[in-house]
Length: 113
Length: 119
Image 1: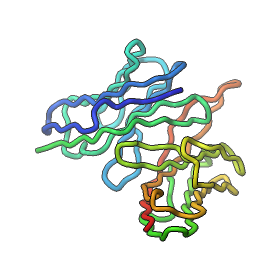
Image 2: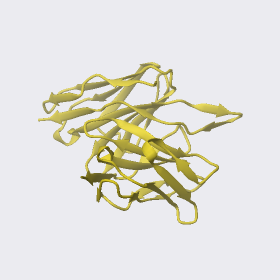
Image 3: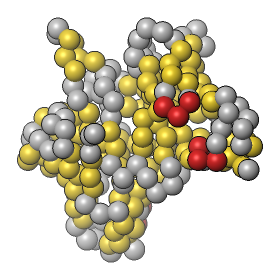
Image 4: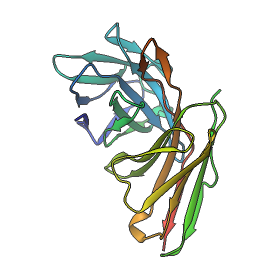
């Protein structure tokens, strides 16, 4: 069965510094992986996705993630965060059928001035 | 742009009431999903539908039912609301991309959510 573990429940960084949000997954076959962002009182918005091909995936707002099959990881990073990046971030893996997604518990990112 | 709308942003109901949460998408997507979101638990799938009148249980279907009479609309029903159903409910939809005999994963688009409080 597929599962997702987000290794940090809360991350706090200063504006302009880099950030790494960690995600490990478990899947019995080649996974499709996603990162979503949820700003306060909003729905989820797709940041980026990995389906196949290049292991480095670039998304919106300067975010990128790297698929690492040997370490079963899909970590999200941004070189320089902005106050507006304060939000909750969810990593998800597809179960392969009907596009069902299995989500991690989420990481709350707080960016301070 | 894909748009997924949910009938209410905030809803307050009493224990034992029958509750309807409505979701509409405007992109002719085949798949629709209902999740609940609780702090520290992420999103958990309640039910999903891959076609009109078709439904499948997700991970936590107990206490819920669904209805999909039209392709664009997917309703979540709480037959008799209980306090442990107080939560944020998120609806999503996605396209099914077919390539030969296989389908590929496509992006799920989410509505803004309904925060339900059961007193």
